[in-house]
Structure formats: structure tokens, C-alpha cells
Length: 271
Figure 1: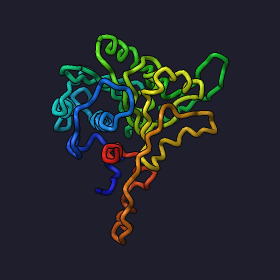
Figure 2 (figure 1 turned 90 degrees about the horizontal axis):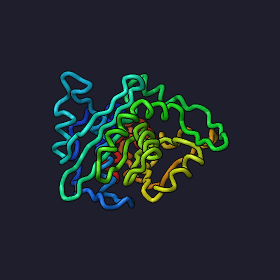
Figure 3 (figure 1 turned 90 degrees about the vertical axis):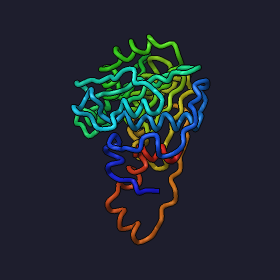
């Protein structure tokens, strides 16, 4: 297994091996229950969402995000972008006998706006009748939600929500506003308080929280501040590290394990 690089962790959109690291069986849109193959598809879609296409870069990186998605068998219906908060998502559609769609949120990039979003926790006050969530995540979703909600209302097919890291947090908040066919979240931080978690019980069987081994992002914000995780945990295991002298020397050039396990590519490889 190749060593996780800082580029894998910090710039996942720079990859060129989308949908080619392993075989992909057809996605099953008929069930909200956890399906490892569906998880694989959604984890992989959480990688090219980091790639900047023509809407953001001129010229865009080649192959473009749109071309990557088309090769995978889907069409990018719409790109959502808030220049104010730095929040992005894509809505992709799969045609066929049973059409379905996926709303994929982008995670944290090396952008000060994303860092501000991540660090703006707010304070969970537990006011009577009020559900409290991470303030930065809520403001980020608010900045794109009207456009997303309008696009979702036009669809007449199952829609799956997903995302990695910050994208997972945004997908979770989106699911609280409009219930998806299922929610798959990868490397997600905690999003809200216990009342928020309880508010999602109507889709509890369709919330799948996938955690790669020792992924450190899944431990923040801390429970001591009353933040709680949602959904059913699906724990992944990293392969046993090779303890050769060369492996030890090269480890100094790689992210520490609690960060390496957060890299999107490792979720794809380990599902």
C-alpha cells in the first residue's frame, strides 16, 4: 500500500486516479441500509468534489471534474459555491432504469475561509426547544442552501447525501433540513448537541458514519463541549505498518497517522 502523502491529505483534488484504484460494482439506489459498495461510490465521489473545474479555475486542471464524473457514468447537474464562506458542493445524476442523484459537499481546503468555518464552534446553550449545532458549519450551509434546496426540489428520484471532513458535517446538516435516501459521511467531525442527534432519528437507519482507523478529525469538537456524533458507526481498519528501517525513515516525510487516516484516498482504499 503506497504511503500517504501530504498531498493526499491537503490537496485530494490534485489526484489523477479517480475511479481507477479498485473495481466499482453498480450502485444500488434501492436501499438506505449500509452497503459497502454504495459507501465506496460515495467515498470516491467525495474525492473529485475537491477538484476545481471551469467554475473556479481558468483553465481547469485536466482531466476536468466534469469529465471525471462523466467517465464514471454520471452527469454534473449543478455546482454550488459561496464566495463568502468558501462552501462548495456538486449535485450529480445517474440515468438508467432507476435514476438517482448524489449531493456531494466539499471538505476543508487550504483556504482561510474554510479554517474560519471549522474553528467557529459557537456555544451550545441548550435553550429549551432549540437545537444547537456548530455555528460555523451552520453558516456555511446557510450560504448555499437556498440554491441547493431549489435544485433538490426539481428531482424525482432517490438522492444520497455525502461528504468528507467539513463536507461530511455540511451533508449532515443538509440531511436535517431535507431527508435524503441515505446519508454517508466520511471522517466527520461532531456537528451538534444530543437534541440535534435525536432530531435525525427519522432517518437513523440511513445515517452511516464511516471512520478510518485513528482519524483524528472524528474526535473534534470534543464531547466535553456537548457535541455528539450522529448515525451508525462503521469503523475501517488500516493495514499493519511495515516496520523496516526505510519505512521508519520515510515516515518523517509523511503525515502522522491520526492525520494520514483522514486522507480521502484512504477511505476509498479501506472500505
